Image (cartoon, rainbow, N blue to C red):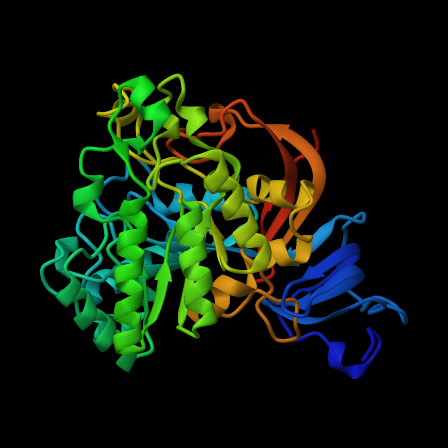
Length: 444
């Protein structure tokens, strides 16, 4: 079918938009090359190398991509927002502004709010608020345990029906093995995804950075990578017992990557993620007690960082996330051990992740799969590919253009980015949600 065929007749009241002169990168098919794309209303009509050989449909808005990358909109699978309860740190509106500027068209929010997202009414509240207050798609993860207290299982079945895309206790692990087994068993009945923060709490208690020589030199209590691997190994045994779908939300060390690699070879229904920060930074960045580098899990050795990059490249690691966790100045302007954990990352996710491509570790198409089609498939969401009938959620970016990160230049309410004053490569030019441009970068 070409642009002059009957299939392109406009639906009354909808806008045709033609994207021309693009470098189409579609992780859904593996295509990376020149092409064109047509959207109608909120859906993709078609895409291809010579889509408009017979002319662009009349009355179309024409977007000249000037040879830049046009790909499915990014999906960020781990985003903390302050709403409800801590709107001074972040709201759905401010988070969506930051997401749109970062080329992210869908954010998955964590249940660590006040009140906790642990029942149907709160899932529905968050979805309703997002419909009216957010520029991008918002889907909530709900709490795996009641009140995130790790004592009793939340109502997974009903919340899944209400629209929760997965279940997690967010910044802490479900430590009780019996309870975790029950959660996994129950979740398997609904094909629900259980997402775990893989950190054994007693081994991590009191720690604030990676355990090792640098922590000792700085006089800071460390968190051993065994805290991660022990919890991960335990959970994988429980997955074998229950057959449930399981996702380790952020790996941080080489040993964990190898554990997941072996689990996948055994055919377990498991997946895992990594934050962009852990692909680009290591424990040395903490050297001046800079609290913006206090993350969870902690930044680890350079060898671990390299192993995470390798895990992304070979497909062991399925998803790259921002781990966006806004903290106000009062929470971060404290001695390192007392400072709050977390860094923002919505606007820097793509640029930081592109470092893996620019350094030759992975193809652009495979890298973008970790932020588009892979999270879409894990969560059962539409999007992630440039196919007919898919949502017209798109990201246009210049992979070669550089920019310097400044706190004041970021749209998040909080400014705790670990990449402040860093030069990053990759600039988002336009973000489209349901066919509507929600972000267009002004010429500089």
